[in-house]
Image (tube, rainbow, N blue to C red; front, side, top):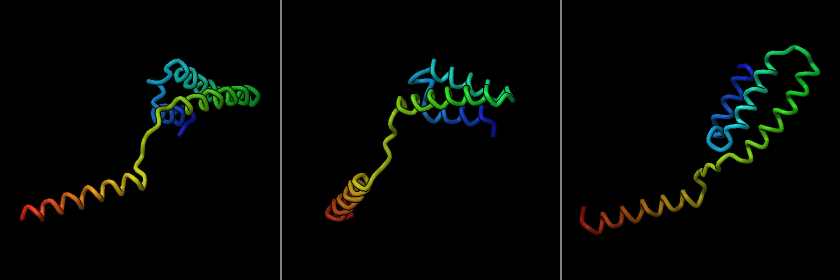
Length: 91
C-alpha cells in the first residue's frame, strides 16, 4: 500500500472532507508529492509537513462513541427488564 493510499484511507476514517476539506486536500497533495520524489531532503520536509497536518486533522476528527462497560450494563438491564415484563404478561 502506497503512502497516498494510506493517507487517503486515514482521511476517510477521520471524515476529514467533512471537518476540514482544505486541510484534507493539502494532506493528500503532500502525500502525492512525497510519493513522487526520490530526493531524501524533499521527502523529509514533506513528511514533516504531512505529519503536522495529519496531527491537526486527528484533533479535528469527530469523536466516535464506542460502547463501554456502562453501555453494556444498560443493554443487559434493558434485556432483563423486557424478559421480566414478558414473563409477567404470561408470554
